[in-house]
Image (cartoon, rainbow, N blue to C red; front, side, top):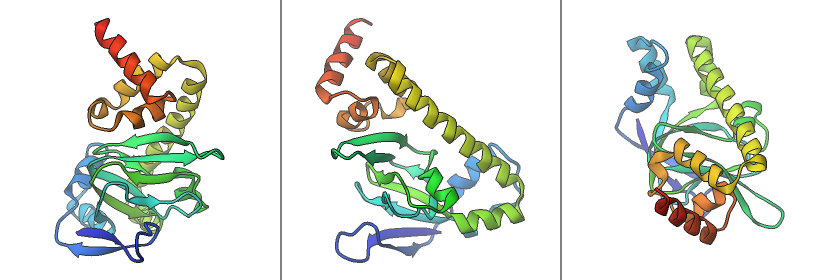
Length: 216
């Protein structure tokens, strides 16, 4: 199944509809099949629960303060999750290029207001799975629960490590970690966003990258 997302009212990205376009979510099934064995019937059941959508650049799928009803699997493009502090500065928690999952994990699991905003950095294509449908799948395909439990644990560990890195590592070390974690994004997303992710100004990042290139 494939859907096209568009705002319902003006430019309000918090309200959107999904328009049906025929296509199957083979990428999601392929990703799951790398970790767990699935029968054809199980694959068909999962496909029936997944909504495939297209997003334009800067389209928001989760707003801070709203409940995250879906977890997204990125088929193409790139998304990011971020928070905004009291001074209006954005703090990026995660990027999600192709074959990554992204949501506000706390909000999605607890069905409480989100602390994060999730936004498309580029024109993107994603597959959405609602919390309700996820729980239904857990009942019908128990091995999926283990897969998503590991995914949730990795997300929590990654968030904790990000906090420790921001407190203890130098800017150079944080940039090297970014390059190791997101090698496909080094030259694909605006440098401003990379600077925001590692906690430096774009000018500082530019100088640091120049120094790193010269030292190689």
